[in-house]
Amino acid sequence: MYLSRLRSVCAQFGRRKARPYPILILLLLWVSLLSGCHKQVPTEPIAVIEGHEGAVMSLDLSVDAKWLLSCGGDGGIRLWDIHTNQEVRHFTGHVEAVRDAAFSPDASRIVSAGMDRTIRIWDTFSAQELMRMEGHEAGVYAVAFLPDGRRVVSCGADETVRCWDLATGSEIWRFGNALLGFGTIYDLAVTPDGKAVLAGCANKTVLMLDALRGKKLGEFAGHSVGVLCVRVSPDGAKAISSGSGKEIFLWDIASGQGRKLKNKHIGTIHALAYSGDGNRILSGSFDRTIRLMRADGGGEIESFKNGESEVYSVEFGPDGQRAFVGDYDGVISIWALSV
Image (cartoon, rainbow, N blue to C red; front, side):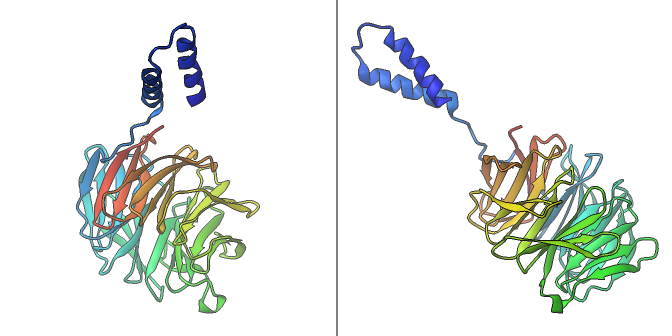
């Protein structure tokens, strides 16, 4: 782009026989280049949502793109109308921080993971608690519904991944213990076909389990420190992971092969999200920045500075033109994105 613009401007001046103002010509050339190629990056969010009194640990968008779900260090779970940015419902019951919350496939229920060692199922419309599962021996870090809506998986500081039957509330299978050496299991994601669960572990690996029986299918290694976040692409072919090593890895799920993606974060990368078409990635860091990148590793598209607050969670808006960002101060900010 710069070269073609330079040639065009030079050609215009080259047709003139006299060049009495070389300094002026250079100045005009410089202004032309800047005005045509400089991109204005937003310095402020387009909207801010407030309500949490602690860090916003997790964000999830409903399948019908009407609601945004958030949870946090204040022990609360909140449902927001994304068109008005107003709170619709507040779910209370956990007695410690809620590390994760997610919608069921049809958005009629919500599952939450608490540091109080409980997993809870809620009715989205009434905000009533429907079921409580207990069994983890330490705080629960992440939860997710399987695509059939009849099971959920969880993981936590007791170094286990567990699967639960929502008809009975009983544990179906359990993988892991302190003797296996995976350490705290910080995050998990389910493939769209419901066949596999990927989990980010303190021992620097991404663990892949059979979702039906909990058997180990593979282990992806490459991170230099613990893995804090794992996300699966919409088509189920790829996965991304990040952690306190300021690294983002892109994995081929079928082969287990991975490569480190270039990124400009200088702090722990606590949050990742795929766009709906799978072509872009959002990352959020304790360095207080949000970065939009090409999912194929093609590089950064743009970045934003989230004031003076560390970023704990990110999510794409339904149109892919907005980013929802949850931070340490309990604020959800909304940013306009390049498409």
